[in-house]
Length: 400
Image (cartoon, rainbow, N blue to C red; front, side, top):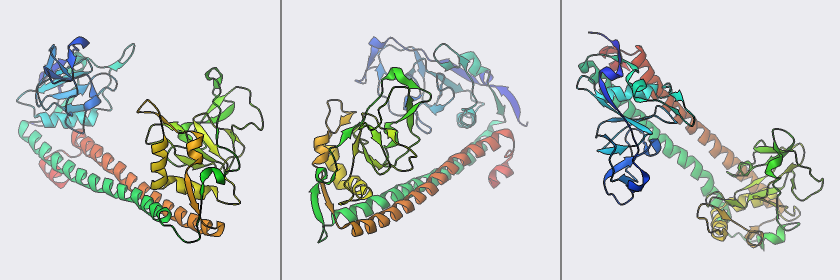
């Protein structure tokens, strides 16, 4: 018997999730693990539970395929134990004539194509629609051969991915290591000063126009993401129709050093030097502007030093706030940051070297990111070829 097109409901039991009342939830491990949607989905298996329920509505068993049925619709994972599923999930339990891993691979290949119904809040798919999904069926022995081949291919791809991810990490650490080397050494002839003593004026917070004046055009206003990541992105702007005043402090120009003064603990204090602007641009209240005295230090030299591990640690320690997910640094703490600097000629030399190492590490990152994207595409391509017929048959699968 060859391949045929069959309905999922003829080979599987589909269990639509149903959420218990919130009063039955707990985090103490009482009752069954409860999953509401795909938040805990991994690459293949669902993660350890974070919530339990003593009121059991709909159950999934170990080995059932879990499908996200509410935005996003389609992603799949395996359940690793008996669990209670909420309305964001459905469990698909394969019959003995259908290998669950074969079905999982097929649903994985189609997860971006599974369409739900447009509801008032979410796009969704219901039990009947899942049962009506068609899939290519072949005898169980061939299903198992396909699964074995795909398992091996995916394992090889995952090994390559792990190696590439490590190479990507190494590429990022290459620059950080060199940056630390430059600024951890105290070379004879370097002067020292608090950052405030190297500025032409006190740091200034920007201005955020009223929300009522947000528009699709008008005067551009930089966003936090224009500085986050230690790279100036002049295209990361919003627009305002509010009146502005020429010469006000909230305008940024090429050469100005900008710092995020309020952000998550990891992103607060990120810096970037304005460049590529054709005209001044407004910077918002959550960003601080530092006008460096270029007769003493280069803005880009200060930029690199503020990226160094020593200064990053000081900035992080000085960031305050009751909210653990949002920290702020003030102008005084920024002015007190210790800066060491050599002559302008030596600064220019170091900037040139740092620019070169940064460019090299960014080029490596781009290569490895491209490889990671290629590996993901390879998985998708392999699945598509198997289930559209390009790689059917034992001989073709073995060759792949």
